[in-house]
Length: 94
Image (cartoon, rainbow, N blue to C red; front, top):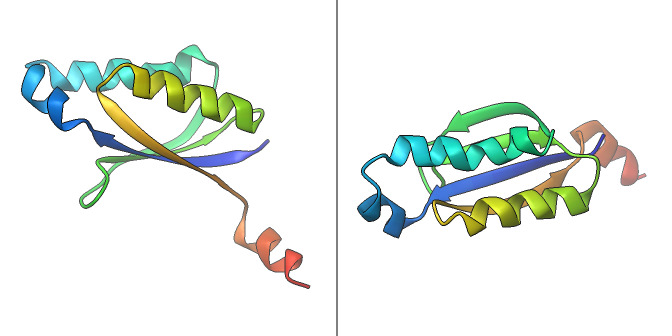
């Protein structure tokens, strides 16, 4: 099944407008579960992004839909990358 990495940043406006920000973030991440997508790993990060999710989706269209749904909630902003195992990548170079 295709694998994706999604990096997420908390919208600066959401930080100012929501006193219950942890619940709002959790609700935004529930989009994965509601869509039946398996999140393999979810991390909080220090740096440019606030969170990183590694997930499997049946296709790129579903990954796009997830990102759009999460973004539309106004709490998190996303960037999504399709990924393959490094070993598969190196095989493509031959």
